[in-house]
Length: 117
Image (cartoon, rainbow, N blue to C red):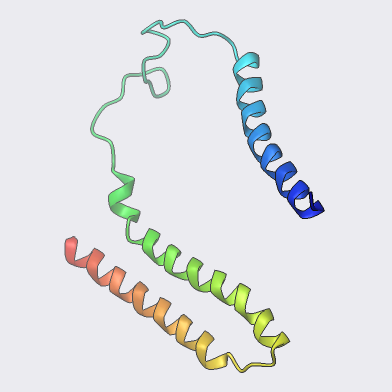
């Protein structure tokens, strides 16, 4: 077996072992809570809640697609910029096009979000 396959197998084993061990450890350490409705009732400063909740998702939902658009652009730039330098390619126009495309997606998202209001 090649050392590469051994390294991949160790990585897969660790990536499965670490989250499972953390979940099991937290389950063993945390105190056992009985289902008492008084203890688990929602309260604010020891008083009953009044009024309705504000839906945060409706207020900030248009920021999520903007974040994803710029995140994808940054990921592509982070991958291709060093490769372009190594290959001595001129990627300036491509990178500028990605930024402009992300900006266009952001404007479209804001316009759609404002038309829903």
